[in-house]
Image (cartoon, rainbow, N blue to C red; front, side):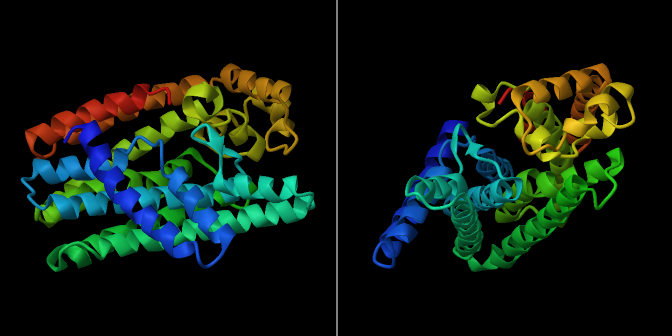
Length: 347
C-alpha cells in the first residue's frame, strides 16, 4: 500500500474515533472536550510510519483483512501519540511537530488567565499525562475490534511493545538523572526497548499476524524491526542537536538543556573538549550561545563523527538482516529502502 493510501485509510479511522470521543466528552466538561480536540490535533501531521509498516506487511503476506489491518494500524498511531504526550511531560518539551505540545497548550491557557507558573505547569502536565493515558486505553480498544481469532495475538504484541517501551523510557530517565551509567552499550539497549520495539518491530509483527504468517515470521520481523529502530533513533539523536528545527518541528536545544544521555554524549564523555563545557549540559537555563558551545564540543571531541559513522554501520547491518531474511521480496525491497531513508532523513 502506498504512503498516501495508508495515510488516508488510517486517517479515516482516526477521524471517526476522535469525533466520537469529542461528542461524548462535550457534555461532561468544557475543558475535557478541549482536551480531546487537542488530542485529535496532536495526532495530525505525522509520517504515519507505523501504520504504513503494518499495512504493507499485511499486504506482502497476502493478507485480505484490510478493515482489521487499518483498525490495528490506527491503534499503533494512537499508541505512538500517547507515548509522545508522556515523553513531552517527562522531558518538559514545549513543541512537537512545529506546534505547542498538549501540555504546553494547557499551561499557556491558565498562564494567560493570570494564574501562577506553578499552577500552569501542574495543569499542563496533568492534561498531558491524562491525554496519554486516554490514548493508550484507546489503542487497546481499537485492537479489541479486530476479528476474534487474531485478537489475542495482536493484544500480546501491543502489550509487549509497551512493556519494552516503558523499560527503555525508565532507563533513559535514569541516564538523564545520573542514577544509572550511560555506557554506549546500555544506550543502544535503551534504544532497542524504548523506540525500536513499538515503532518498528511491533507494527511489522502485527501486520504479519493479521495475515496469519506464523511465529517464525514474527521472530524474523522482530530482528528486522529492532535493527531499523536503532538506526532511526541514532539519526534522531543527531537531528535533535544538529538538525534544522524548522524541518524537524522540534527544538535543537532541548536535548542539551535536559541533559539527555544520547550516544553523542556517551562518545563525548572524557574528551577534553567536552569536559571543558560539560557544566553547561543539562542546565535548565541553557541559552543559544551555551548550546552552540556544546555543539562545538561534540564536534571537536569526535562524538558527532562517531555517531554519524555508526549510523552508516547500522544501515548496513539493517540491510544485511533484511537481505538474509526469508521475507517476501516486495517487503524486503521496501524495508531496504526504508533503511536508506532512515539513515539520511532530515526530519
